[in-house]
Amino acid sequence: MLKERILASADPSQVAGLSRFFKCGPGQYGEGDKFLGIKVPLTRAIVKECWQKTEFPELEECIGSEYHELRLASLLTLVEIFSHAKKDQVLRQRCIDFYLSHTSYINNWDLVDLSCYPLLGEWLKDKDRTLLYELARSGKTIWERRIGMVSTMQLVRAGELDDTYAIADIFLGEEKLHDLLQKAVGWLLREAGKRDPQRLKDWLGPRVSGMPRTMLRYAIEKFPEEERQYFMAK
Image 1 (tube, rainbow, N blue to C red):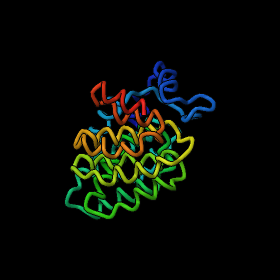
Image 2 (cartoon, rainbow, N blue to C red):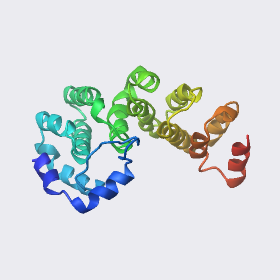
Image 3 (cartoon, one colour):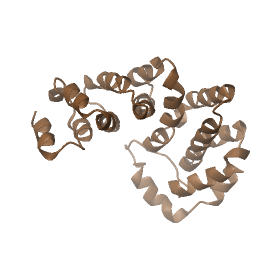
Image 4 (cartoon, helix red, strand yellow):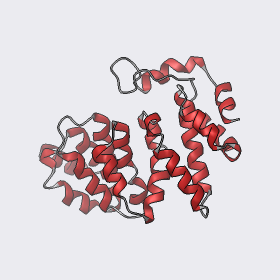
């Protein structure tokens, strides 16, 4: 049902625009991805209607699709199943196992950002977080490495900032860090800074001179103008 609803909602007039937005041209990070022309709000609406009737075999079929929107629908459905299975730890574990065994299909920033922290981040709130460090340090793709960083969003929201800063340190000494990883690290630092502004400033102090500029700009985006200029100048 999920797959049928998504395919039936295809809008060819939107394909070119989505392909440009997600950088699917030759040499770009989303090269070769295919779109049906469905925007995220509509995909979410379909998932809301279908998730209770969607079983794992259909999720498997959708996540392996050549079409971006079907992969997204599979991930968003997985989030719904996981989120509603609060007392069913067996089902939750199955969701996490499915997610981690299909990261090769999570191949653009939206697929990462809309799935990793409500799944992996939430699951690890009361567990060892070594996996996030391993993904950030040794992920096979930039998308797995981004999962390691962005998953800490759920921890930040719970007031736990240590892992965000520790994982950010993994990326700092890396030459030619991909722009999408710079943005992810900066984004999470900014979110951590909203909870404790002084801690972010203290963390930046000895590190700012070696930070990629894109990462720094994202991290200090919410600072007052004078403080932003101070850190950028350093």
